[in-house]
Each structure stands twice: as C-alpha cells, then as structure tokens.
Length: 127
Image: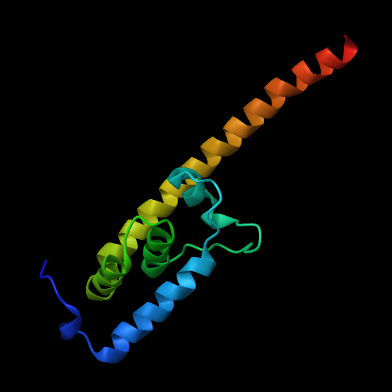
C-alpha cells in the first residue's frame, strides 16, 4: 500500500475531510469510558436512535471520536476507503458483527446482574 501526503490530495478534499471529522465528534456519544461499551452503543445512543455506524467513514469517525486515531490518521483511513472500497466495506461488515456480539453480551450481563440483585433486594426488605 502506497503512502500519501496532503500534497497528493486536492485542497478541497482536505477541507471536506476536516469538516467531516469535526462533525464526527457530535455523531457519537462516548459515555462508557470503555471502548467496547462505547462501540456497542453506536447502534442506539440516547439522542441518536438511528444506527450511527454504517460505513467505513463512520467507523473512522468513531475511532477519531474515541481518540484512537488522530486527525491525520483519520484522513488517511478515509482515503483508504476511497481507494479500496470493497476491502473496507468488508471490514465494516466484520466490525458490525463484532458490535452486535458485544451488545448481546453486555445486554445478557446486565440482565444477569439485574435478576441476581433483584431477589437480594427483595430479601433484605423482608428483614
């Protein structure tokens, strides 16, 4: 894979990427302070009921919003999506499968904790 720099890109492409990156900070609600929880929550944030992660650019925006990649790396990754759309779409598909598995796991854990603590609370009220 060939590296590239800003001089290889038209000036308006760089400006458009920066605008998209600025928007990404509003797109994702980072509440869990844990990457896996925040990733699982990209499908139903409180003030954004729609799926916030559907494309390669969305995935890159999430990585930027969580601080895993900086602006320059985000722009490079977005360019990769334009250069290799088939490969990056496959990566998105796998990422969404991972997200669904994480979400299911966290929901099961939450239900387990809820059902475990509920009888304990009921028993302590009888004492």
